[in-house]
Length: 158
Image (cartoon, rainbow, N blue to C red):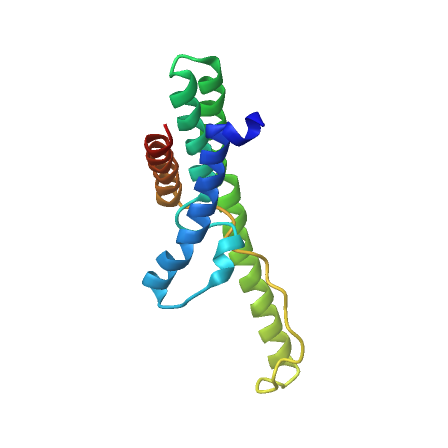
């Protein structure tokens, strides 16, 4: 039953769920649209990946100390995940935006060539997911969320 008392694990899981949940009201405030699908999607403010890995590193630091090898591993892992979130995954999202625009332009061109500019589209087009990665500010606030949430949990639990 040690799993039930593994503070870094539970802090990380809590940070993921909290960051995913908080995306809904943040998006609502920004756009006045309620979108519950954000709870299970990637991207957005704050980064749940960053919240999870910083919660993990913070939990490990609180349990084992800043000088422990386990904290070093958790910290390097967090840095790699957050770097990836702002790098590769963000670029994949940027590519998806361009590809979706190319597909839309191609379909518009085909419609105009055939003389059907006002004909309704008969089948839906599946677009590539554009919100894959994070802006640096989203990663920053995700990381901050993980650290602060873990410190609050640690204070109330221990």
